[in-house]
Length: 170
Ligand code: FEO
Image 1 (tube, helix red, strand yellow):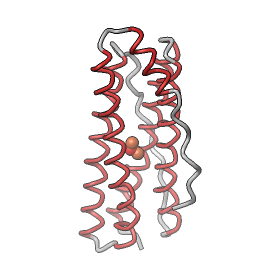
Image 2 (cartoon, rainbow, N blue to C red):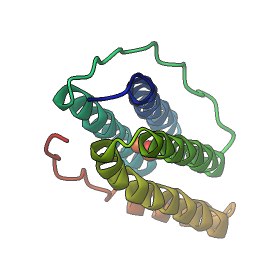
Image 3 (cartoon, rainbow, N blue to C red):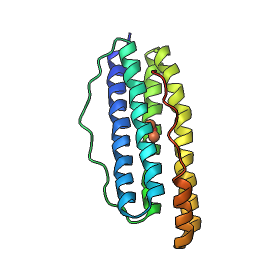
């Protein structure tokens, strides 16, 4: 049985993951109109992954007899100065998500909610990966600097990111 506190925090986390999906979609749109289709693809894939994250939490709530309460999704950032600033925003966003997951885990611990702790362990590992991916992109963009041909090569590389295989419920 989910405690009221854990349930409320899980609903907030579903909202944050959907807001993440929306934020990455805005970044994809930005890259599409900036003639960087590879980076747009990277952001589309990331947006899709975030939706899958929201669904993992959604399914956990359903499986545990909780009540999913969907909340309004905040409008994401729409304007960016450079490809680097987009990925810096992505890293900042992921760091905030990591904090939120860690607090959620602490809440589940305090509530002796072992099932939620096990489910959240996946998210804790995933956040390490998410932050690393954004950080790597930032370092590569810094190396490219203002060299247009290096930027186009990176765009091609980012374009090869493929969708992760569909993940099962929970
Ligand atoms: Fe689902 Fe990127 O946090």
